[in-house]
Image (cartoon, rainbow over all chains, first blue to last red; front, side):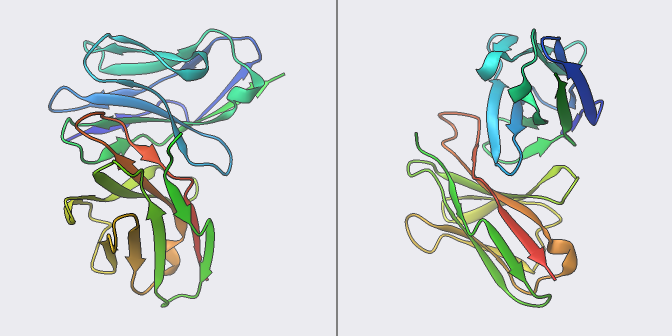
Length: 113
Length: 114
């Protein structure tokens, strides 16, 4: 079975500080992993994805994530938070079958000026 | 840039009524999905659709739900007799798997059952 756990439903950082959003996955087969962002009253936008190529994945808006098989983790980071980063972030896992995504419960990021 | 579009953005309906949520997937995509997000909870998979049939569905997707691709562009989710607990944001998504593994999501339809 596939699942995703996001530690911390709310994270607050100061503007300019490091952003670290945690995601651990469980999968019976090599997974595909994704981070999506949801701004208020908007849909889900893909930030980045891991599909068994490079383990360090760079996404949009300066975000990146590192796939660590030994830790079953796919944490999202950004060196310097910007006010516009305030949003809900979802980690998701899927199999290579074209079917469903399994989402985590989400982490709400607040950026303090 | 191509995008998934959903209509309406917000629908209010009375309990027991039927609702149809509409989606226009990206034109060259072959896989279509519906997800829902109850307020404050995680995004949950409902159903995936490929080659004019359901390829996978979750426990949530019971007999009250149905999906259809009535023409070459629209993809609809019908809830036959709405319940209060059906109130949620419903997201449509499409993907061009196996070319790409990610899915493109629409803006969502907020369904409120009163």
